[in-house]
Amino acid sequence: EPPQAIIAANDHLALGCIKYLTQHNYRVPEAIAVTGHDGVQMAYIFDPSITTQAMPIQEMCKSAVDMLINKIEKSASKNRQAIFTTTLVEGKSTNPNAPNIIDL
Image: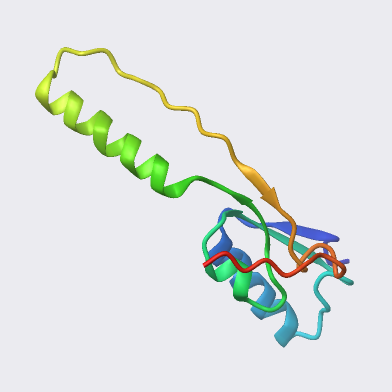
């Protein structure tokens, strides 16, 4: 029995899953739903669009660089933690009636 859904570690892997599934005659999402995780732009323009847990990638990168610079300049400083909010973006890979979202 194939699974009802695949939760990929990131959107690029989700795209690969969908490509494999469609090449092997599985219908996405009717036979197998697929989700990704990160919210890369490719997820929104791919057909079917990927349902993804979008992450604020630019904000995360800026925070990581700021923390790294702070650690280099003040090596004795305490380690810091950053918490970011994600957004569920429903695409056609889990719901055939979902709207197409193109946010370029």
